[in-house]
Amino acid sequence: MHRFANPTQFMRIANAIYPWVAGVAILCFLFGLPIALITSPADYQQGNTVRILYLHVPAAVLAEMIYYAMAAGSAAYLIWRHPMANLVAKASAPMGAMFTALCLICGMLWGEPMWGTFWVWDARLTSTLIMFFFYLGYLALGDAFEDPERGDRASAILALVGVVNVPIIKFSVNWWNTLHQPASLSLTKSNMSGDMLLPLFLMMGAYAAFYVTVLIIRVRSELLAAKIRNARMSQIAAMPQMAE
Amino acid sequence: MTRKSRRLYFVLLGLLGLGAGLALVLTAFNDNIVFFFSPTEVAAKHPKPDQRLRVGGLVVDGSVQKNGTEVVFTVTDMSNVLPIKYVGILPDLFREGQGIIAEGHMGPDGIFAANEVLAKHDEKYMPKEVADALKKSGRWQEGSNAKHPAPENAQR
Image (cartoon, rainbow over all chains, first blue to last red; front, side, top):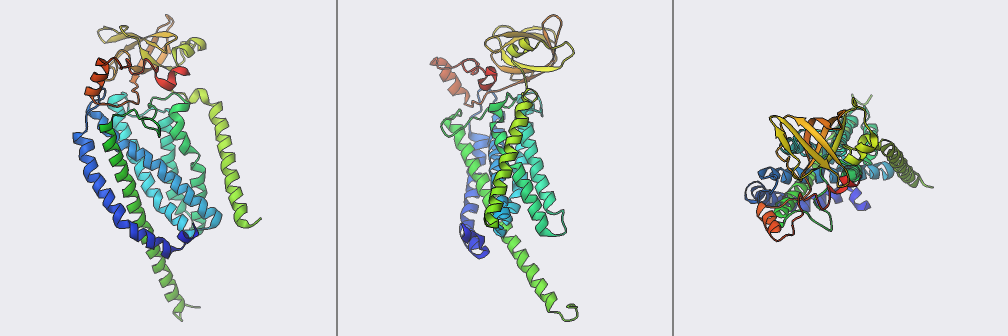
């Protein structure tokens, strides 16, 4: 685990998988989107509205997975002071916020024609909105301190506080009665027909590969920015008149 | 104990405490978190006429009567029934056998007066042909909810 803490090692692995994940993302979008939006069958109950599922469900899954990744990175940063773990957490947060927003927006547009309302305060919708606020809070808090390290520590703690909410999102539909229906998919059974599962999995693959691709880009540019900062600092230190 | 392991235990204990506290809060507020009550729960609660609440259940087959814009129907949780009246536009998914949620208050006549009706849909997705084939072969569970009455909800 500790060899990933070395930025050079991390970037060597990241750069090696980068073209592959980028390729997978492009391919999955290229095949997944037309199947999801055009050729996959309409639902017996919901008709073509069911196609929102292929955008909404993967966004929800990714939003939760990215939160776990962000929390794990934050924990590793707080406990072992791994700067790379913190970088991964920080680079993940905007992606998670974006996927949560996508999930919420698609869900609202889906709820209006099917349920008859854009929004209700049931346990599933409310807990998802809370996760969105945790993402936004994480992003805001990290930049709210003069000392970047204090900001990193504060936002890492916030990420850990918010992680208890994520299983609540998942199980809210089982623990309480909600307007939102329970999960269609689990490891052991599926309540979806096969020709609907294919576009769903393609879109999940596309979203996940897109996340990893952007994560690598963000971490890479963060590392470069840190290098530039360090170079500037040593330049300034080298200037005799500034040294005083 | 090194500082690292101290921090590790601190984080783990913090998460444990937070989780336990949250579990207590959620259990205590259970009645406020549930989105709707079943007809059985409504019967047990005897809500006051000015108390707004939501009831959910399956629309009983053959119970829907429309007079102009007013709709009267009955919902069930498979053990109790509750008549509901509603004036307004029903969601597209509203039909007999479908799970619905109505928000309003109990009328003095024992009929639930709804201001809003929302349709629930289940977690099953399939093309129309598959649904038709299932119906033909007799493996169809009507309302898809009826056999597993609105799965998690009816048990409550």
